[in-house]
Image 1 (cartoon, one colour):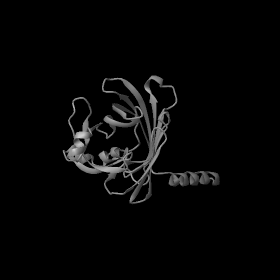
Image 2: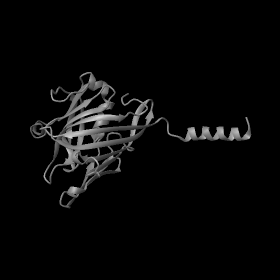
Image 3: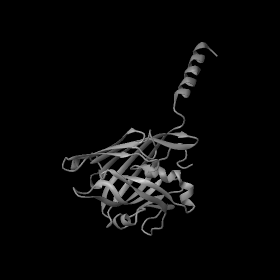
Image 4: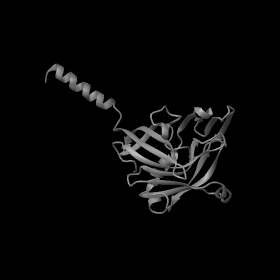
Length: 250
């Protein structure tokens, strides 16, 4: 091999060693509908991550929200999540400018969460919450399902605490297998409050997954504001545009 050839080969080896192992990209799109079947909005998800031991690990997640009737327009809302600290407790930055609303969740220490919520109308509410090993934040529920895939698909349930950021606290919930005639999927699970009191106030969230572990349906309260007083309750059907190079579930 010539000197030039050896140089090129060395450069290739170094580049390979420096590159992240089996970098992955997971993309999917959701179509949200009201209970009457009215088209509400579209979600476009892009998750960048890596593969470790053959399983996808999310790092950065971006979601843009577009009105269904205005598919070529600019997004009306955007959310960014950073899973570097935990796949279950991502840092969150959500913006919905049409209501002048924003939400930011960060973790200044390993045992605390800081919440800054700019409410519709401009008033800012700040909260600090002590951390918990079983705390789940925002889309971290999706990773919670995949981490407990074997339990859920064999009939077991999982208890956890879910952050309610606009209330500045968390509540006990149960993730369990479900049956729902209105949502079709290979596997159905639901998230419901553990408290008897909350059961009467909060409807379960129904989640559908395919056999690969990808979210295919969501039915329940969303984080997208419908008006100044409440968020949309919707059924969202998801379609995967690109799977990562490795498996989604262990």
